[in-house]
Image (cartoon, rainbow, N blue to C red; front, side):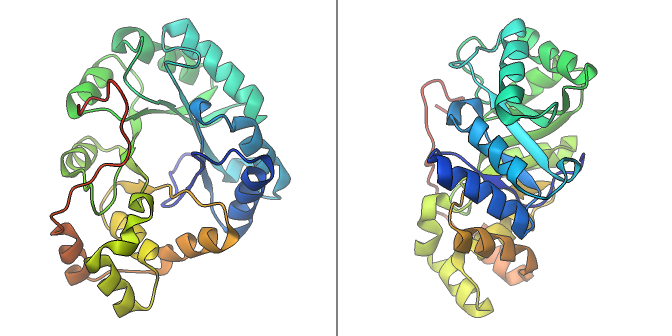
Length: 267
């Protein structure tokens, strides 16, 4: 599966064995076709079991994970080894998308990115992604990458609109994948989002996800574990915001970031 679905299931912090397996299976049965995990999340095996428990064909599911400097490392051979371990945990022969989780630790574009090219040439991954990069680091990585950059995953929501990164994704024709797209639940407390949700008779998360989808090249991976939330998020695909709705959200002046770590490029 080469095209990135508009909506995916995020699995960060979903480490309860039964809940994780069940949420992945429920999401796929409901219609999701993009599942996102990471070595750092500690749930790749559970995600793989959830994928195995569904009747959805493997070729119809877009699966992504991330290699991390603090797990296997980001040196050339560490990336290769880390991907092999992730595939074993997931119970898969290959991945649709592999990300560099953070440009920290022993990340070195000149050494890390050629390992991704090698994995792609061997057919172990279909696409290359980066996560939590700045524009400058994105450009540096692309200089050391023969494969096309397929995706960049960052925190993005109405309180962190990432205009510069969205423009870069559009200018260079790759996907921007929004994690924490519901601002850690704070979309319920944004007056503009509340008003638009009431206007359309939908939930605030649906408004936030529809706003993200209105941006060219932008996709979202909301985390959800309950069936109600999984289905509510999926229903956002049926919501089309009008130009006034989008303009109101674009004009929100609050800026709040909920994910931080030492060495982040924005610090």
